[in-house]
Length: 429
Image 1 (cartoon, rainbow, N blue to C red):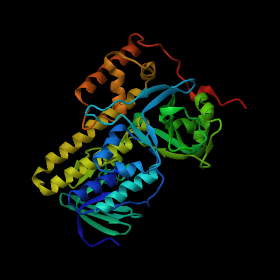
Image 2: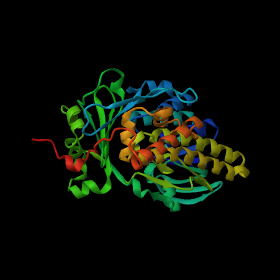
Image 3: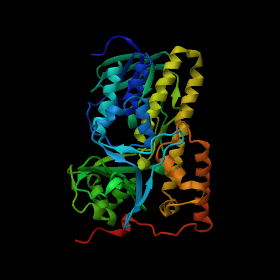
Image 4: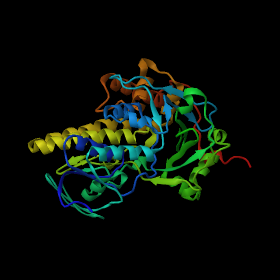
């Protein structure tokens, strides 16, 4: 049963974003309730973490707990065309403020449970298997929710409900991004071939004209493999959604080779559709939108958990300040929205360029003038909060200019044929 009281903060969602928000609220002296519709541990995709996220875990005092979880060290990332022989490897470097140059990949279920357990130990009241049926009131100092376990009252709402975007749907502000309408098909496998040494922990991004695949080592045995592709392609090909991943793998020579002895842990692949969206404004009277409930970026750069936890901490800080000094409400909401937009817009820009073949040609070339490739890798490492430092911003602008020249005026790197799943055909019997 939910206590008949008014909490300082109500958090919808007990994933990493919501749990971080609750943890920081509780440590800040606020009474906070977390409403999680599922029960931990539960399966979730998004297993590859960023160096900036690794630094955040240290800042939150969670790094020792994190080290107890089974994981694979991650020192960079690798990219290859679907019909390529050898991946191009990129290595992380220390961040602009001395942040770590490494991270890790691991199964999400124990990680998510670790963060929500830390929030509970800090004093947050956590209700699992408790869904939010409706938002009844949403205003400064006056939030009322109806849940499957009874009514909840609070002074401020932090919505970390993920793609469910409870507050965004209630407010009618959730907007899909038409140019990023794609579907992810994914599963876990054993027996996927790995490289030696530090390269064995690098996620591999396998690129094709229609989208891309990820190959992420999770532990000594299991590897997460997924395909992100345009929404209409699988339907037009007449492929059942739960068989789409196998269809893509058998058409991709690089994956066929490294997965020759692989076996899926599930009979059919999982499916997540329509995932890129924004719900603006990110804060308003009575609420802050956190993580995926605010905006979700195509997962090509594994930004989801890092963005979620960074925004969870920022939202908790803003909410605590707002409750102490209500007269600063507009300024605090504006600053928080700027934080979310300033960091996510960098990722959105990079994602949109990533789907241009010219970007892939330049990126796979491996080098560029004035350290532009290092700037791109710094974004991949998550060093964008609250916005990239000037040394990164001007290099990213230069990279964009060079990309336009490469595509529209004259090639700056050797051209490469685009690999297409639709024309490649399946492997020979």
